[in-house]
Structures are given as C-alpha cells and as structure tokens.
Length: 124
Image (cartoon, rainbow, N blue to C red; front, top):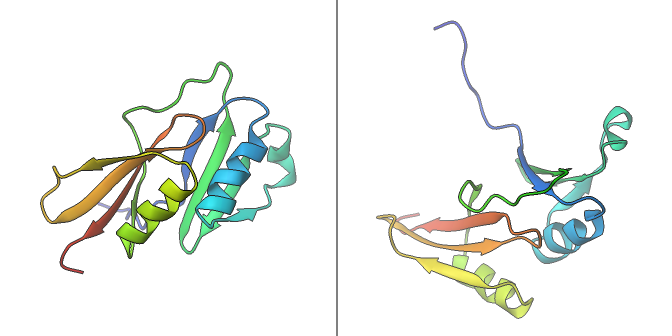
C-alpha cells in the first residue's frame, strides 16, 4: 500500500439551522471544548467548530436535520465517573452500557439528539 491513514482529523455532527449557540453551550460550556474559528470561505454555511487537545468536532448545519441516533463518536475519558456526574449535574441524561469488555462506558445525547459515547478502559 502506498498510503497511510495517520489519524482522524475531525468528526462532523449535524445540527439544525440556527443552533450554533446551543452547540456552544453544550460543547464549550459543559464539555470544555474550545471554539475554533472557521475559515472565512466556510462561515457562510453556518455551524461551529470545536477542539479539545487533538480532538476536533465540527457542528455542521443540515437542512432538513436528522440526528445521528446510532452512528456516533466515542470519546476516551480519564475519570469517567466525574464526567458522568458533571453531565447529570448539567441536566444531560446518561445511558449506561456494560457490553464492551474491558471498558466502562455510557452514552449521552447532544442538544440536537446526536448520540455520543464516553468510555474509560479499565486497565489504563
């Protein structure tokens, strides 16, 4: 093979038109991501971009909007219990899941109904 996949550059999730402030409240205020300025050529499309370390999430506007109920990003977390408590304290419901051997994990939904997985490997 003459190519190498090095990493996922970003994950794009869809949101309804006009929902940028809701995205900021959830991804920046609650989860602690930093907003990244979109390139000038893409601003006309709406949406908002975020980063946290090497993780980038792009919230793109989709019309008509349909949330991702099954497809999802999975975030590896240090101190999963603390994150779960933090989300619940911010009125974000969590759904536990014990089906992945070697991991503690749960699911939550962003304000637009997109499924998000949060996991912590037991041996790390």
